[in-house]
Image: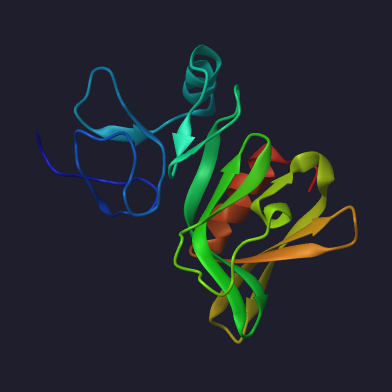
Amino acid sequence: MKAISCPSCGAPVEPSTFHCEYCGSYLIPEKDEEDFIRSTFTDILATAEEESVICVCGRGLEKGEYPIRSGKANLYRGITNAAGGHLVLTNRRFLFIDHGFNMQLEVKPEEESIYFKDIIGVKSKTVMFISKRLVVEKKDGTQQEYVVWNLNKWMNAIREVLPQI
């Protein structure tokens, strides 16, 4: 099998796997090709309806839930308070999965999932030309910030799934 690259982050992908080890993107093989492609919403939705659960970064999603975008991220709480892990945008929520090395800064249960019904807005924020942040504003008046790579791609994916934002 020929070497392939993840369509989300460009990292090398083992042809026998169905996800990128680096960014966690969910990949499926094209039936008539050796290359892997990022799944279309229709393909993933069909799989999500047939299967009871899709797993992303070791975490099972809800039945009928499927990933739209995923990648490494930091849950930003302040200049000295951030938790590393993986951010997943699904068809229902933002899901932050702690990578387990955050000994002092564990992710609280209310920080793990933000369902779309609890969101009033999502915006991008750049700090000092370097830090690219995704800011999720919640109906309860609070917000969560994530430091992400490829902020524009995240915002485009969010606009697709949440056009009202």
